[in-house]
Length: 288
Image (cartoon, rainbow, N blue to C red; front, side, top):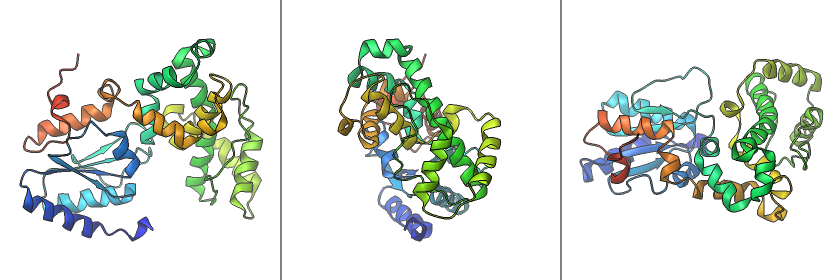
């Protein structure tokens, strides 16, 4: 349904709001969850958040506003590690493929583990960094399959996976079972051998874990780890939505200011001095 969103209508709404408030700035995001992640960091008085619902819509909206000469609108999109169709000083690419992965690699994950996991079990895995690495390794295999699907348009369906291919004791991934589960989840006639061939090519290219993982996959693996490896929580407390919500709630100021996203937004503000996105305390914060 997000294909039906008209960026011209969104642009018109932005222009109308600017007529009412001359110095109003606009932060254009892909989705509502991105807005939730940035809660408390965005000045909601001086800046209006616009949800475009897809990366493509964000890019097209920024491009349209740029061509009109409209100032004070900033778009933020996930990084898919392909050559961008449009580049602009008013368009920031996250350093990760998914906003939730940005949070996962910030100090927010350490805070999340402090509240949700068992201290001794965390240390047995190598501390928060050890847990982070094991989760990323597990999610990476599925990330390679997602990339293979994107490149060849296999039509694979990833929503609703059970993640039975991830060992509940140590997070090891059975790659054959993973591919079979995704194919079975797709419910279509597919050439398994060709999928495996392309998957293996992608895997050999050495995509780094942190760059290509999906936030949903990471959250699912973290949930599995919470059931046994790093805690003993009931499965109903370990769903990917519970994990994602917990991570976003832990994404505090100390976590946000260490990200490239914060630095890029603040640099944009310095180049667009009439317009503000960050809350006042972050605009004036001195980073050592």
